[in-house]
Each structure stands twice: as structure tokens, then as C-alpha cells.
Image (cartoon, rainbow, N blue to C red; front, top):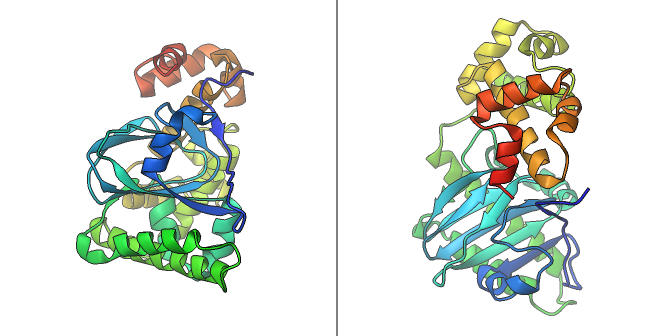
Length: 292
């Protein structure tokens, strides 16, 4: 299949650290014409990103939504999300890129809430406004300087890992103050299990009763938890998840809506078209043409 929107894998030219890198937004702007994808066109990342805008006013696309960006805005992206830059002459900042494997290896050093709050995209906005007083700008600058020290600088990898943990801990602190507080609880654990089940079984069922049964809880209990955690019914959350997955697949390849309908578990393509239009206001083909 020819890809309309590229899937970008992690790669680095840095000889020291293989699964994490930090670059400046300015350097990306300067070499955008030489890359194998155009950063200002929608693309899907196969790794994790922290994008910290230290200067400028612009917008950034995340999963088909444009977010307003200004000085000291930090944006984070999880593996699989769609994004695009909108470069302006005054934009400056840093981009930290890291693989899923690196992220998993660092989990033991990160607060549990950080993982939930920053990388559960269905729970929170993908942006944080960073106060000058937070010292986050200093940590990013230090991270950048340490990263580009000579390859065999003493204890370099441990220093990078420690700065990564500090930055994430600071961001969790900020995110906690800027969003409603989700306590570590049985309800949150149940919701995350529900989300995981949808990720693996959405082609089997779009019925909330199915997932409640798989989890050995009542539909009513599942619905109550979803309303409390994400302010949506279980069915609404399922539908939003499937529509986002459909959008990603529609723009990532030349797949036809009829093929996608079967892949998503619809028995009839016409049912998928009706379902998609109901939730996205346009047909699958209209959506695909809009984003070509």
C-alpha cells in the first residue's frame, strides 16, 4: 500500500545513546526540506515525543486537532499519534525523542502518576503551560548540553537518564496542578483495564456490555467509572476510540473504506460508513480526501 501519511520510525545519528535524542526545533526547521518526511504535513510517530516551545506563537496538530502554542508550551505525544508542526520564524525550543523500549526501561524511576497523566491521551490535553519559575527551561537546556558532550564523557548515560527522570517528575508536578486530580485507585485501574481491552479487541465488539462481561463487572458499574474518569459513557468512549483508529488507518494508507470496515469488525461496509459519518460528520472517503 502506498502511504499518504508516513509512519516515522525512531532513528538517530548520535553515536552514544541509541534510544533517546534531543534536538532543537530550529534545527528541524532548517533541515525540513532534506528529511524523508515533511514535518509540517501530518505524520504518525512510532516513538514518544516531548516538544517544548521556548519562544514563538504557532499551532501544533495532534490527532486531527490543532492546539494553540505560545512561549513555554510543552506538548507530548505517544507512540501512534498523528502530528504536524506549523513553523513560524520566531519559534524556538527543544524536541526530546525516545523509543518505547527506552520509556519502559525508565518506568521504574518515574512516578506512577506521571505515566498516567502524561501518556494516557484519552484522559488529558496533550499540552502543558510551563511557568518560568518551574526551572523546566533550565533542565531542558542542561539536558541538551549534556547530551551533546563527547561520546565517552564519564557517566554520560546515567546523567541523561537522571535528567530525563527529573524532567518527567517536574512535568507531573505541573500537570497535576493544571488538571483535575486523578487519584491512584481501583476505579482508575478498572478504567485503564477497559481501555487496554478496547485496544486489543475493538474489532470484536463495539458493545459496552461485551467489555463489562470480559472484566466480570456490570455494565452499570463500568459506565459509572467511565463517567467519573473521562466524563463519558462507556459506549461514547468506545466509539471515540474506534473513530480515531479509523481516521488513523484511513490516512495512513491506500486502504479502501470497505476493507477498513471489515478490519474494524463491521459486517457490512455500509454500516461502517453510517457509523463513521454519525461520529465524524463526514464519510470515510470525504475524511480521507480532506487530509490528503
